[in-house]
Image (cartoon, rainbow, N blue to C red; front, side, top):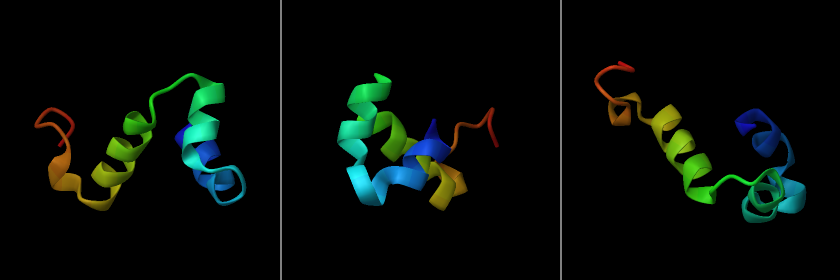
Length: 46
């Protein structure tokens, strides 16, 4: 789902896509932040 949002966010925006996919926008934003800064990942994920 994250890849889908990345591919279409410029056209539709994150919040409307998340509403249709029924996921919280904060979930997407947390994943993007973790991707940009791997130290934000949980110890288990690291």
